[in-house]
Figure 1: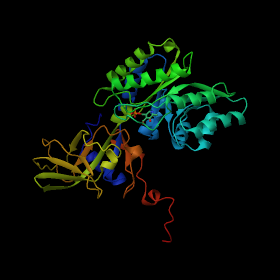
Figure 2: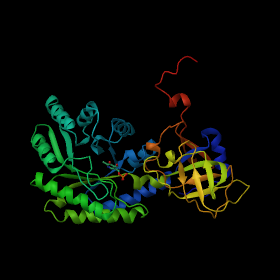
Figure 3: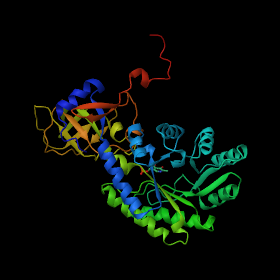
Figure 4: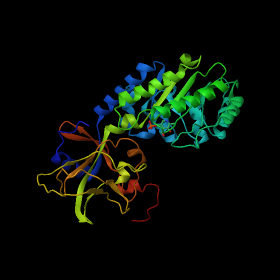
Length: 402
Ligand SMILES: Cc1ncc(COP(=O)(O)O)c(C=O)c1O
């Protein structure tokens, strides 16, 4: 992230508006990563349509940056569908996944021309009923397949081969139903993982679509962590291309990708002020004004790169250094092996890099409002999201008389 010029005084200046912890959004890094990924994927898969998985980071500025670059949207809840439409993504560029969606939202999406990936029986029934009730409309659907991985040998999402066959029997040839093909997603980012999902897609597609499907949605998780985006996406794209070369219909199929984490990981940092440094049990505990629930609420990663942005004073602490968070949860560690070659003292800021994926969108307001999001603007800051007030955080409850 290109924030090297930002010094302690710059961070300190914004804290009076947003508090002692906040995300910093770097739009130019996001644009660079979007271009990098797009070039790698479409260079190898010219038929690919690129969609961004909104769940990875739903900050409207992030989603809009993808839309401006011509990417479609992958959404999996009524709220994210609403957001994609609000941002202006055309219905023809939206894919709607999910297992327990409100039937009204599935119906609305179908009628708007969104591609709806079907998994639950209920949604298949909604599609059939909507087609009957709206003669003349064309409803675009795909069926999500169940695909096991070494990481998850018994996934709960998607339909097994028999269940896909049942769905195809129910949907194919029905007036108004445009069954385009199949979709899948699995969290295994390795080339073997991508090969596995392609194998499953091709097996099922060959079984239920004698002439081949028109569309295969290969899901997200297309790049391994720690590998630069371009080469990692190119490796996944090559696996997909090679798999399609094994079937006669492979060159006719439209491919849909749904990248999330890899594209947004590096576009946000998390900044938290050091509030306390203690020596305890032979280790140094540095407590900050932010939490693991802001950097990694789901997978609870503690290996983000961390750097110190120091004030004028310096104090060196030796030995193992752990960074603790602001909640009362014992396991609230943001880092467990902060390098000990940097000086740090109370009042400094710690900056955690690469936290753009599944942080803000999964963050909790456990004990405090969600942190603000800011963006560097010249020598100052633009507030992308202000920190909600206490009353906004508790909105919906009856707080009683004052
Ligand atoms: C259906 C679907 N598509 C795409 C994604 C995005 O995956 P990633 O963020 O790993 O790229 C997910 C993540 O859960 C998903 O469930």
